[in-house]
Image (cartoon, rainbow, N blue to C red):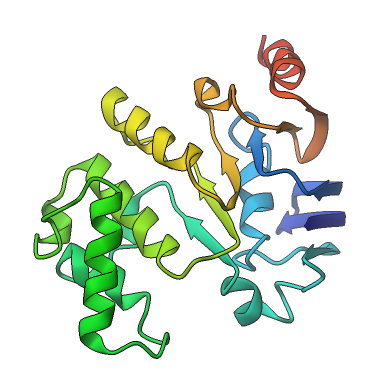
Amino acid sequence: MIEFEGVGHRYGDRVVLDGVDLRLPERRVAFVGANGSGKSTLARMINGLVHPSAGRVRVDGRDPVREGRAVRRRVGFVFTNPDSQIVMPTAGEDVAFSLRRSGLSKPDRAARAAELLAEFGLDGYADHPAHDLSGGQKQLLALCAMLVTEPDVLVCDEPTTLLDLRNKRRFAERLEGLPQQVVLVTHDLDLLGGFDRVVVLDRGRVVADDRPEAALRRYRELIG
């Protein structure tokens, strides 16, 4: 259960979020809104990347500000640009790096990384230079590096923005099949047909919160 209680946030004098109250038990939740609406800021509060200026956030009762390490063990985060998450020379090493505190031996970490890469269509790429992968492959690699730690929640901040249509579809299919709770920030409304809930933000406030069809109808009215 992800909870936002009276959450507000400011960057200097600019109000980014104002009085957000949400409880998110659903398996698939999306945040949508125009640029500057506050949706990415709200998503980043789930694992403590951004701290609220007012109110509080809870992930299964834990505070991401005070208990950041415990929350981040349960919440994975995938950014828009996968290059910002790739830290090791090869794809296999990058996924195995996420297991460095798992207690597994180095060979076991490498084997688990190769296994997960194969599950996500990157079979044979364990020794491939990570930054030489295509954009879609890099985004799948970033997803693997998060999922290998088996988080309960996966937050994705506009993960398909840099992808072409084929890789966008591939990433969306992988996302749909995950057992984790997924919170997706996106401008790509075509991804949301199978979602349980869509939260629409405008100028830092929740203006619609409903099933996809009804929420997106309100969003389209807002953007004219």
